[in-house]
Each structure stands twice: as C-alpha cells, then as structure tokens.
Length: 103
Image (cartoon, rainbow, N blue to C red):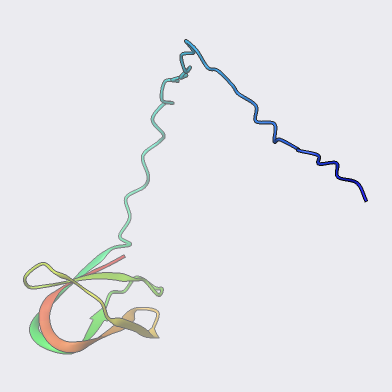
C-alpha cells in the first residue's frame, strides 16, 4: 500500500476586463407603412338593463371576442357562445350593466 497523496487543485481562469466600452448600434426606423383600409369589424354593445346573460347582435359574420366593462369601468370576464355568425351570447356570474366592445 502506498502512502502517496495526490492533491488536485481546480484551475480557475481569471479574465480581466479593463477599459472596454460596450458598442451599441442604433439604426433609423423604417418608413411608415401604408394605412389600412377602413373597417367595420368592430361593434359596441351597451347593456342598459342589468343582466347576467347579454345577447349581442353584432352582424360581423364571425365569432369575435369582446372586452366587457361594467358601468364603473371595471373589466369583467364572461363566457362566450355563438348561436350564429352574427350573434354572440356573453354569460356572467352576476347581473350588471355595462358595455361590450366586440372585436
């Protein structure tokens, strides 16, 4: 049996960074793109009578989504269903008045 001991020390590289300035390249913005065509793919539904189920006849020929705000301006979450391409039903947990922005 040998009484020899081998010591292995880890090699830690040391990197000195002195007087290096980072380079930032700024390019000019590109030209303005053409304006889009006017569109009617937007509808505002005002629910004046408090209800937990809102029927929205939007006539957008599709299944849009909506952002709903109550009368105090607080965003509310509901469940959407689409009986037809031009109507959506929004169901909430409680009745309230407000506005649905259909997009």
